[in-house]
Length: 428
Image (cartoon, rainbow, N blue to C red; front, side, top):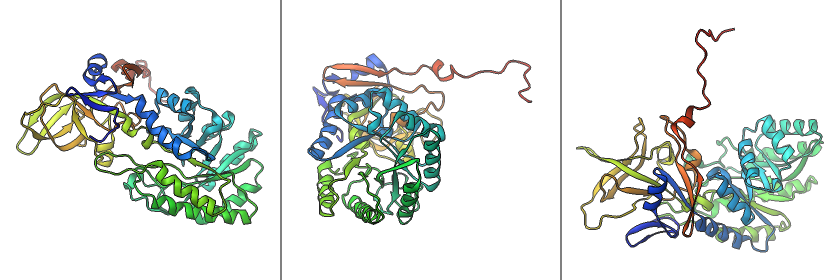
């Protein structure tokens, strides 16, 4: 079973820490997201140990899972935050985040989001284009402020991951071509609305090798030394996030395996004074959650067998979007019963609505299944497609359970919609 040790079988029943999952299904219904507080802390501790005694900041990539309870846990542990929207900034602040420990990434920052972040006093804007740099400078000057900036450079490094989550190649939409970065830094240095703070890159997600990071680091260091020749001194180097987790048989990197060589390289190149920023997301939350779902029907056909469950692609988009693998565990396995190979599918009217394919399972109608490793890019990508309310989320802490997001009702989904009055032409 590929998930955090906080999810284990006890007396033949899958538990979240000390709580049997069937109890949670009975109390909160399904589909249901279940997170382990202990697993969140354990994942954070691996990073904390890796940066102990170093000038480093871990900014949680909150797009992975942005529930306020999860954000608050990491805020209490000392995390900063990597945000990609004004909405995420509002969430981070609502969870108690220090704006001085927030970095703002993303290729399409709107003017209102820039003003919001400048007013909040965030640590840095990771700028991704010349046009964005110009807009940011103008807005900061208009507000009588100086915007702290870091160029997100595109080092053209292959992270050897899924093409949809690879972000460091020259054909990707992210970042500034590293060959053009030096000229943009010179422009930024001359603008009174900008304050140069650092350099940033992010090469992708679900990365399982050290080499792509070190290749990117070498290119960043060459740029930093060129900038020094231009009398541009940086305060930090942001190496992004992207460390992978185990979904099936992967061997993830421990943060220390990556950061040891990174710190050694910075020291050998005379850059140990730079603060190192990391933006992990998936590796902090991915294995800390499961999606609990109940089998509504078993359907056997000459071509395939289907286990039709009450969760769907609107609850967990990754399989349909990336053909991603998630382990599937019966919550109460039926020992000694014949198994069949099933596709785990939902009720949505799309053939792409599947959560797992070709899984050998001994199951019956009404059984509970746990979709493992569902803490990252799961609820945060959920939708209300087919007018399906989004699932509830709970956080388990030992023998305690906290409801951290109630299940939406159907009425919630259209409460803000309006039907025009009869007779209205709708025209001008």
